Image (cartoon, rainbow, N blue to C red; front, side, top):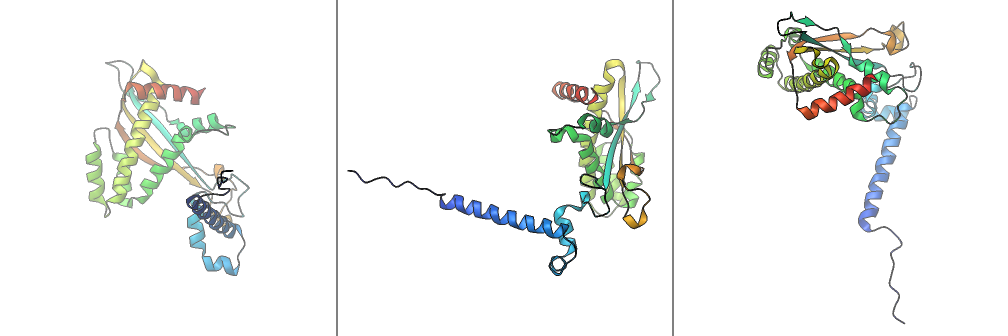
Length: 255
């Protein structure tokens, strides 16, 4: 009889190494999270609160003073509006603020399978809030005065001249362009062809529950938003494909 062929009943060396590495990472991750949730102890103090907080992402952290799972301490908002003209010879007017974040939140309530793109407004608000907070106070004071006549190059030059660091300005200009395009496409899908959009405007808000020893409210929704006013921007027309996609997207958000 021919010799029986040997059949491997285990993983290859490379696969075993990958499994081992993943196992170690899972153990480390679980240990760090457990230490972050645990009360004060010699081991926790040795690791350090700063390290634990930086790993677990303090931006959405919960403490023992929050109400429960899902009660984030930080909330952010995006509101947009447009400068429009109802007819070629009509007088320009400004539309009311449209709370895009609230529209998305309402549409996603109860939806456990929402894609990341369905929370675009909140993610853009988070990105822009972070970009603005990285700017110097003198640079932030320039933002409400930006007009639709100012090109990104002009905005960048003005911000660089008012501060000491270049990287925050680069980050702001990039976030600003994303927000300009998003706002333009959303407003066009909302307003339709009934008006001519001349410019778009937007602002981002941020609110945070203060520490338990210095607050009168227990939920983030009980706090008012602090707004960063960002002036107005050139209207972005977009491609026919982008406009068609946003028409469907906005229709699904607004019911």
